[in-house]
Length: 189
Image 1 (spheres, rainbow, N blue to C red):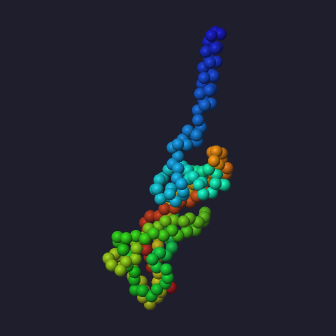
Image 2 (cartoon, helix red, strand yellow):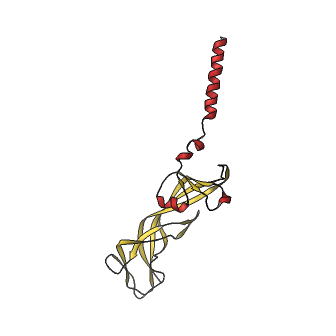
Image 3 (cartoon, rainbow, N blue to C red):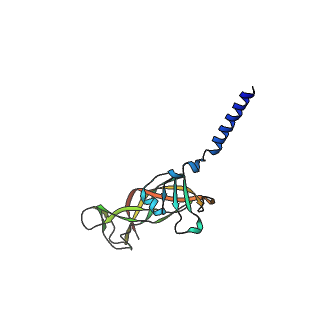
C-alpha cells in the first residue's frame, strides 16, 4: 500500500509539473502570429488572419508591439464613397468616358454610425478613348461619384511593451475596410 501511495504521489507530481509547465495559448502560438512592420504593410499583404502583430518601431513609448485581434465584420451595401478622383470640380459636360482597362485608386473617409473608416477604392480611370460612357446633362454642372459595397473588419487592439507585458486594450478596435461592386454615377447641380 505504501508503495502504491508513493507511485500515485510521484505520478501526481509529474502530471502537475507537466501541466504547470505547459505554455499558455498566447505563448504557445506567438511564433504563429504574423508580424508586420506597419499597418500599411499588413493591409497591402492581403492577409486575412484573425490575429496579427505590428512592431511599434516608430512609437517606442507605445510599447514593443501591437496586436490586432479580429472581432467582427460589418457590411454596408450601396455606400456613397465620394467623388471620382479624376474629376476635382463641377463642369458643363455632356458625358464622361471611363476606361475599361485602367484603374485609379483613392482612399476616402466614410462616416458610419459607429465611426469613420478610410477605404481603398479602385475605380475605372477617366479616358478619351475606348471604355464606358456615362451621359450627363450638358446644361447643368455635373460631376461623377462612386458607389461601392463596403465590408469593415473591426479589431481589438492590444498594446505590449518590449518585454511582452500588456499595457492597454482598445476595445473599439481598428476598422479595416475593403470595397467591392464599385459603380460610377453622375451628380448634377
